[in-house]
Length: 117
Image (tube, rainbow, N blue to C red; front, side):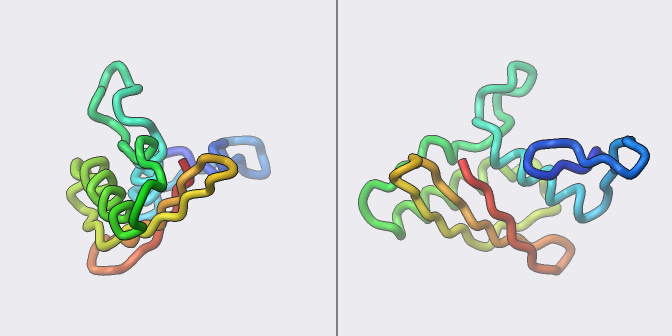
């Protein structure tokens, strides 16, 4: 069980207590966190996070998607319940941000995540 996050903040109930999340929703939230955190920035676990922040829109879009797929699979490898099906990227040059749309399989169901780095 974990605290529910929305836009990087804890979600509180009507009494001001943190709302909790578990099951599939918790696993998907953990996946988003792993993808959003820069790999190597957690001193206690230098392999936690992803390399998505290193990707830039240089060259072929298919090449960018392939690099992103590799980075996502590496980041989510410890979460053996998840299967990464595909990753599609959009690079926003004005803000120098990358949005990755990730298709996952979890317990024989398809889910979509979106992470902007």
